Amino acid sequence: MLLSGRPVPPVPVARESGPAEAAEPAPARPVPPPESAYWTFYAAVAAAQVAEWLPDQPCRVLDLSGGSEFAGQLVSLGHEVVHVRQTGEEPLADLLGLGRLLPVAADTRSLSWLRPDSVDLVLAESRALSMCLAAEVTVEHLCRVLRPGGRLLLVVDSLSLGLARLADQGRWAELADVPAADVVLVPDEDGSITRCFWPEELTTLLTEVGLEVEWVRPRSVLTPATVERALAEGGKAALRTLVRTEVTLAAEQEGESAGLHLVVSATKP
Image 1: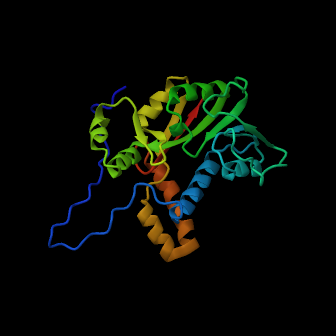
Image 2: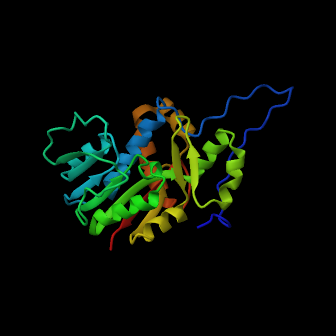
Image 3: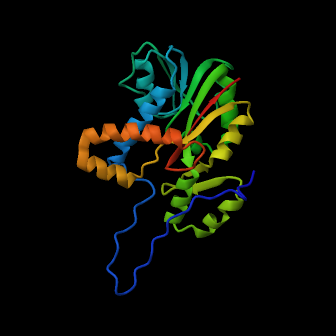
């Protein structure tokens, strides 16, 4: 499937200053640094969106998100959690001993070790699908392990983020090729490659394996600069307000490729 004929989100280009102009501040990077207060806000938004998505009754969840944040949230709500960590990754010491947590060291790209129709929910936060270049194969595995009526929540890099990162790296040739690309792949500074998605592509990817897409939304609509400024001025009170605002705004932006990441919810008939 080509991107031809589809609107491509604009990429801001910094204006060069003339010799008589004062030097402008360096443009912000597409992804805030790890120490940015934006990530405190992002984590709170993600937790709120996941809590809103989860069912009221306890069920069996396959957690492909890595880390302990979502596994801990799921267990605290009474769900039975199969938490997958990459081979070589340290176990979650802070969650060990919890009766409803089953940690498994395995490759998240292949779930052949898990029986078909064996989980009620699949949670793949932390851009798990963007790390799998052969995403088509991965979603087939995800559909296979879901029980009929089960649900899936995925988070991926957005096309807007991919375009901004290509521009930030000065990869103008690759950027020019995006409108005709089947797949948008973006190299990272550490040598890894991630896959970015536009909403239509993500919907097609899931429906082709037999899932029914409920919605595709941005994870965050507010810009990192706006969030950082608000948190610097308003602290915890501002954080609560920002999170409530963001959850509402993101739900109203269905089908748009805004912000850093996209969130998609789908069901298995």
